[in-house]
Length: 189
Length: 194
Image (cartoon, rainbow over all chains, first blue to last red):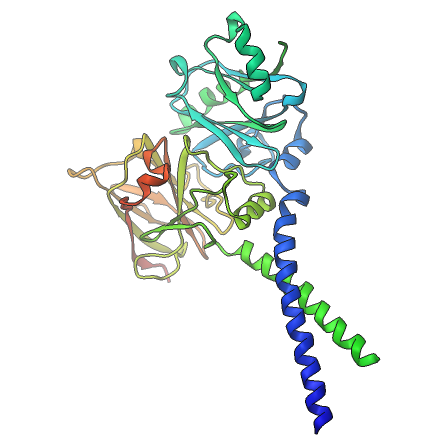
């Protein structure tokens, strides 16, 4: 009888130890998922296209959507950039009912966002740069950057996403053209 | 000796299976940490921001989501009606009430993965605020179901679970202070197809 109790106590000990370990594993796995995920937005985009290349996120452009663009009444396009190589300038001439922009870091966190009410005359013209590059640019602001929105982001690699509202199907060609004319370029400075 | 090895293996098995499984489960459930509930609607204002909790961060990485920024908009998801029952694609619902301030909003019927319900027709299972008929007091009544209905009709199709996703664009409620006294429309079940 006594040996039975001893065995039970050891079993209970092992189970409690296991549960404690489960807690540690839970925290470790949770914190490691973002580091090792191969399904995050950056990885999916890099499979679809190069840096500084606008890629449509919605299914309308043909094929399965690269990154889940949630709202069916919206079109979205994205480009990846690396601020280590220089500043990136994104432009999209033309007018659509509503557009909004988000800048994400490498792991998909939203760093900065703005919409067409923020822009001069509702035209999308933005420059993404690091605080250090901002100091350089401030010293001597080039003429053609004067109307641009400056997004200071303390990151290197990132994703620039433009979303545009498609109120009904008659707007589809207009919004598609807006995206086709958009550009995402490494800016020499 | 053998008993010690067995107990060690048992501990390790509980630790690894329990730890991994609990993370998987926590990331799967819709209702997570950092959720804000208003009536039947749930929003995650912090998701996708650097200040999000670790669960939201893991979910963002696993699903490859690019969440809407604060200046863009805020999404609410409903999975139950006012009676507390799960939303079904075969049922008819009325969504009625006032909508908070925003430049515009969109509403769509979604499946489990929160993608829009496939209707098999040219009409999307989505509505937007520029295209709805309003009541004299500026509130909106929307009928959601398989069969055409007068007024604002949100087409749905198929069978199984359904979610409603309501997104407000360019809205002051996206800043956290605005969320306290927001009221959202109610979802009332009208009936179900047998």
